[in-house]
Image (cartoon, rainbow over all chains, first blue to last red):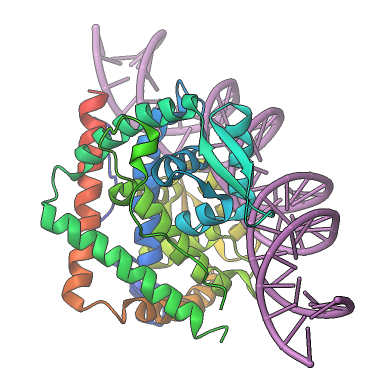
Length: 170
Length: 170
DNA sequence: TCAGATTTGTTGCTCTTGCAACGATTTTGT
DNA sequence: ACAAAATCGTTGCAAGAGCAACAAATCTGA
């Protein structure tokens, strides 16, 4: 079955590396989160890539616009914690593909308010179904309480992060 | 303070998008994990980037090699859930920079066993300190139990994922 | 009111990443 | 034993991402 030796959960080799600083990779959150994010995102990728030709950024923008309705690129950046150039390009691609429309902001003319076209809404609906199914599959093992805890923890993490960022460039 | 409207935790706009498929972005794990991973990784990035000139991939390879000692690229891929070409290039860069050494595998001559040089070990030690500090900062809000739960959940997630992958290409 | 600073979104440039193809080696099945 | 399949790692090429610079609009404060 080829699963030769997926993830050595075996013991450390600290000894050979000399001084131990106390750093432990297996509890290092950026590492753990990256791993989980990469694994889950990779697994869902075929849903939007094959057949729809979307990139991960594009799918994200589509999902956020589908979820929040009229929204600016700026807010998408804030919601997804992503760079504006990345979002800008995803928006362009989705617009050219006919999934999104831009409308000049009424109160603030720097902004462009994004909305799904009918086509885009249909795509969002289709992908939403896949995403829901995928998410349920993932969560079969988790109880609802655990899942809630999980989200709570991720949220607390973000709070800790912004707090950290705050006391640095104060 | 510019924190104009970071993350609209407000209500959905489902209504305008037509049919509701039941998909909810705020509970969609790939999205949540990506967001958290991006936020934490970004925050730690200066530690290895500024002054050491490492990329994220390179730091990851360094950390894993520092943690596990002699290891092959293949196992690094498995541990970090990353692509082999990405790891291959990070290894090359670290080797050229003098942080890593390759040794032809004795039992399997396709593999190259990686180890930290003294320089690499020193770098790992220095960055390990930063990482430990960063991780502690992040976790100040979390109690030890919560943190353990968090790791357990991430782990369960991975199990669910590999299970899912299994029953697909069976 | 109005000059300077800030914010939004786009773009150019460069570096990184992803995928597929490849050589070398090892494993598998007969 | 040996041909076919699989695995490890590298590399070419095209696509994506990151950073900085920028124009346009808005905000700030005197």
